[in-house]
Length: 565
Ligand code: PEP
Ligand code: MG
Image 1 (cartoon, rainbow, N blue to C red):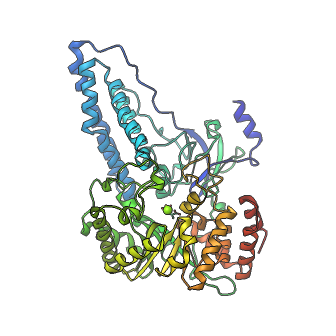
Image 2: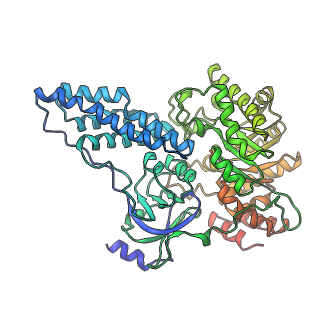
């Protein structure tokens, strides 16, 4: 109680800060999501004569949970990535290995069924966590399924989001993908979690649903049930507001709603304003806000729960459907960025001690097996075909390129597949230091500031504790971008930015001042970015860039850039 009182006194002055995960703002009363179920009791042991009956309860309970998740995934109008997560989770509920292990435990040791499921799942969770990277992220999915089956066996309500009686801000320690996917955007006004990073399933799903979200928000545990808060998913803040503040999506925070045609500075300097998308719903939103095209199509998100490589024709049709809303516009597709934070289960990548530093992104194909090679070539062909079907101008780029040699090999393969415009992402500091040679190989580059920052600062982008280092306003990052832009200017190579940095209007000004030629961000962020660029002349952007470059730290860079123009 006292924590709440203290924060209420601070209402409007000291917001809680977390990681921005899904843009938009809303005001609403807090509804707390209950903590997951505790450990079910280990005893008393089931008497020998009842073991068969008790063991036999497990499979139907798991089937009931699986069917419920499947039904949720089959609701009409659900975005494909949301449905896929639910289908994958439903299959997990009926995983024979899990059920067999639990059933045997009841039969052989008389363990109560709920406890047997709990213990069997623990083995899977430990194995996934030991594998690290995206496998470790899937451990949360297994825990979610485990708790649902345990609740079913115990006859208690399923853990997770309670039924919402009105528009609410959901506050949880963490939210399972299945919980996030069931939210109704009109009722769940915003999400706040104490755990999680911006690339967790929860964040991906929140963005897909268009629900503002802040993750990794320390202190959210202190928010009380019913307390009125304002959540700003773009700024990553959660702030108690006065009782009486209107509940609902915060329109004041939404600003302009369209990009408003080709964007130039007031003195006519062109900057392409393009969108980050993963599926057709995003593409429709991109077209809806007037994006000039797509600067980053994240192709691996469609493969999130595919157990086997989708057939070439299905890939082509999928890409065509995703690109169709942007007919006539350029679409830059990134080839599979598998590994670390991006799950592509069908590649069956070997576990590594440091997945973010391992064989991930283009390295899977550049250093991988011939088997993997075929996956890339088939994807490139499907992208070329899908773009032709959709009537878009395709550009392709590879993720996680460190050297000119890697870039050259990718370009050759993409051209062999029929791609005309081929580039690479700049996500590894070595690629900037070797930019002269690298730029000679490509038609364009696009900076992934999310990864470039994590590798520059040796700071895991999913770590809430290191969010300060992963701040794209860090002058060291800006100086690296300055070096890249200077080098690119010598060969007139276009430099885009498609990491989260491009979504911040103040930072977008700095990027344009540094020489960045296109800015790509989630559709919702684009109108505000376009409006800011269109309000300044190029010289003002350059002054903002100069001020930020000269600053001693991220906060000073932000303040200095805002003070210019
Ligand atoms: C990035 O790293 O900045 C990027 C755009 O790619 P992703 O976030 O998908 O890794
Ligand atoms: Mg990246």
